[in-house]
Length: 422
Image (cartoon, rainbow, N blue to C red; front, side, top):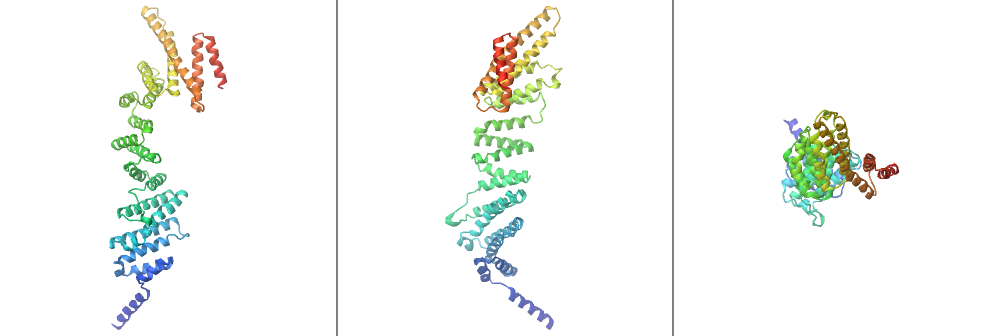
């Protein structure tokens, strides 16, 4: 019994020798004696009855936040230390909801943790292209922000957070995407969309989610984000419609895909992208290998009808060139088909005559569209490479047409322009 009593007394003496009072902890924290503050608060909270009191947790948060600022500490270790600090502050608020220690100091520890996770660790990690770590720190900064906002806490000069930190949320989404965390990126981009933010610097949120839902084949979510995008960014209407076209036609084979285009054109009669893309698809289908032995007539009749609708909305160089090129090529095809008719029967002769007349009409119809390509090029001070190609080919079409029409003057004029364009 004597031995047991002696051992218990020894343990008691050790605890007394190493225990810390809350005043000791507070002194080291307020003096910014980081090492001593952390050791003191750890010893203080190691005592069970102290861990039931709120003040120790506040000073733990304070001390651990100070410790996390050691320049020798890695981003990962600093982030872990700040997380401990934030957990401690949350514990303090749980034990004392009035939180006088925090509020008397303008909640400085919490606001410092918010800045530390975001501006310090998050930005530093992202700059180092350590996107996973950047994402985790940005995300933690949002947790601190949301905690501060949920409690209605004020910083210095009565500063208060808004419900969402838009820029921080954007950074978090970008870091998640760069870290290949597509689902996480979608969560934070959606926060921006749900806040109905329409500033141009946040358009990526809508675009990302549209592509994300399209790939997920989530039709309801895709339709919803497209409608929100159109409402918030009406100037990007062509982009939203292009995505809608892509989603509606994804995996649909030709010629069934053309029914999809017809339905979309009925929905958006004033959209340029729809009929232009439809015309490109028709053109490629007409001259594809699979159609070499098939009847292309219905599609050749459809293409100029659709393309005229595109040009009526917006008379672009691309649309006019596609029309001129198609009509010219089709006139050659018709002439070749007419030449193959050798029969002497009246019906054969009539068919041949009708085809030759149609070939001439198609060639003549191509002229104004090719001329439009030339005039639009002349009006463009900085043409792109593709526009230069279209211009040269339009000149060649016009020269060839006037060669067939035996108009030497116009043929020579276009030949000169072709040489000048070299």
